[in-house]
Amino acid sequence: MFIRRFCLGLGGALFALAAHAAAVDPFADHNGIVPARADYNGALFLLSYHYPSGLPAPAMPWRSAIHARQISVQNARYYVAALKDTVAKDMHELLQDYDSWDPDRRGWYNDPWLGAQREAIHGLSVAVASVEPALFPRSRLSKPFTTYTVTYYNKTAAQTLGKIWGTSAMSPIVDQASTQYAEGSITVKLAFTTADPSVWPAMEGALVWPAMVTANATTGQFDEPTLHGLRLMQVDVVVKDTQSAPRTGWVFATFVYDRDAREGANGIWDKMVPLGAQWGLDPQVNSAIDPDAPLRESWINPRAPRYAMETLGWGGRLSGPNDHGKNDISFVDDGTRRLVRSAGNTACLSCHGTSQWNANKQGMPSFILPLAPPVGGRGSPYLNSPAPGSVEWLRWFQNRPGNVPMDEGSIAGDFDLALTFRVLPAWQQAMTGNAHALQSLDASGKKIERVGAETE
Image (tube, rainbow, N blue to C red; front, side):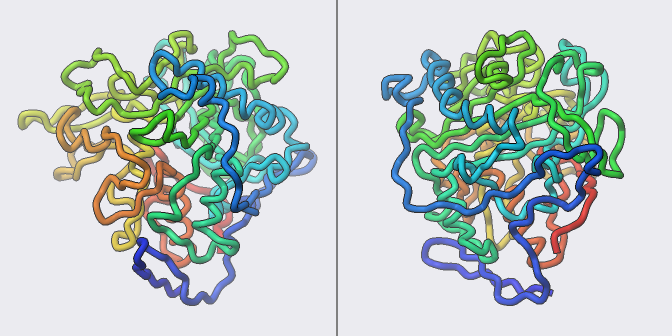
């Protein structure tokens, strides 16, 4: 058994492992379930965790693209284009020359502690267990799909991973200083779908990555890991930039696959087109009162492919096909319980704004989607929600800098949702041997049935 001790320091919460009786590997590459070499003879995923420190501020061409002004609906497309160009060479190699991909050489890094969740070929983990066809009526999805993701941090961002995890990752430091990212920090999240063109025409010609899939809502397989081709659907590129986005300090840019886009020198990367960008949550706009009110802190590309427009979040705020921006919700309105299917109830920044850690509660006090305590179990299988537009609902739609938590008594995670939703719970579970509640949930709050060896 592990003995865990929480120590409160002047800067916040310091989590220290006092003793342990079994070996754990926070830097495990994957779950150990590898394909037969006769079926797949390429490179396997290797975790990149030699985090740098003391780096100078990087060049930030995205700022120059908008003439060092604040990002706005009018100039966001130039900002997003510059951000995409910045990572283009690395993404081209990662996506289309994986056998040559060397993340250490390229300066890209991963979170520790997620080995048990990662499949062996590309380090992908289940993001949303089942996305239903009802969300995509216009793009003719005929079967549900599961999404898989993997996240990379650039070397500027990886300095923060080093501050939190050190060299051993056994005793994370989570305080007001350690969780904050430097200007120019970038994370890239790749999102893949189990749906192929036969069930979703939007994926015709999309990049295919082989993966050892443990959950597949398209085929109905949720037991034995199987080699399966996943289609690249979405890429999120997120940057810390308090000059361009002073209210939150971050700009979220989402790119989606467009089968009609032209492929150029950067291959499939050229067919990933902007869905939009978000740098704030437009708290002054109550979209329950006026659903068509214009937004000033989300830009949506009017030329984005049809399927990506179907899953925008509350009031049209930015949310991609992988981002569970629409859900079936249950709420009480004037004493009457209402059940609404495919309701817009989140956005990129509203999810990531819940990134926080409370040592006393051993987790995140608020879920990533607006939730209310269930009343007698009513509302299932819908999400029990505050009434849209209510004071409680609007807690998820406020602009805060990354060092201000959503809930008092917590340490803010600077919009790094992976840290507080996945990585710290995985560390805590490994230390205690007890299942952590968040480890069984996907990003939409649904239960994940995980297959594979657990990190011990």
